[in-house]
Length: 245
Ligand code: SF4
Image (cartoon, rainbow, N blue to C red; front, side, top):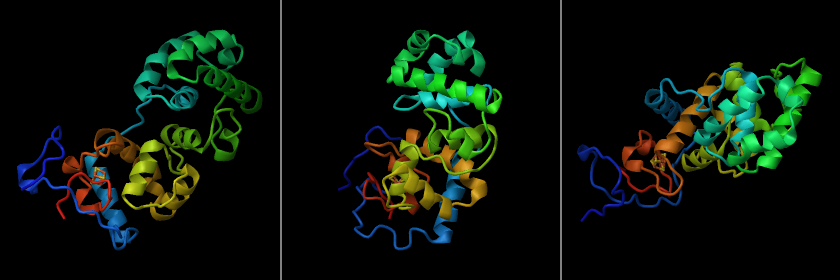
């Protein structure tokens, strides 16, 4: 008898019995086969055709600040905080001259607020003093901003400037890339290197948006909703909660 494992998941009754997928110790036979990668990309593109960055922003500077604030925090929470922050300090110049205590209060609810306030003010100062008030457009330059690592750099360069300098690897991209056997690494830097080798560069920007949305909605950390997953037939993860093959 089938075992129901996903009581809260919607399911297509034609999709077969609800059984836990048997663990395949070896995973996919050829996880990096070009046709498998192409199929994953196509399914994601079809599932999320218009996906965009979930952080509210009007320019590169706002996106930089929002991404710094999003560390260890939800985008929803960041979007609640940034309107008042940018109303009070609308430009890098204004934020560079702000009172640190006031900045801390404005970003307090995003967590790690002392560090984040220090970083966004430090970033504002570097943008003003070294880049004429504009967020730079190369990875080497943007990494000079305090609080900005490759993830934030890729978000800003990709989502605002449309420059595919790399692949955004956040917690969702890292988890899904491992479940889909696109990498075996555990650090964002190594995962990004693996993804950059197998994903065509013209898909880098959208691919990370798609994986982030898929990770939030379906391939969630604790109990992935495999019964609703468009990638299920391509996935042999040992984390699966349901399998058709
Ligand atoms: S089948 Fe399950 S584990 Fe695999 S990608 Fe989909 S939701 Fe994630």
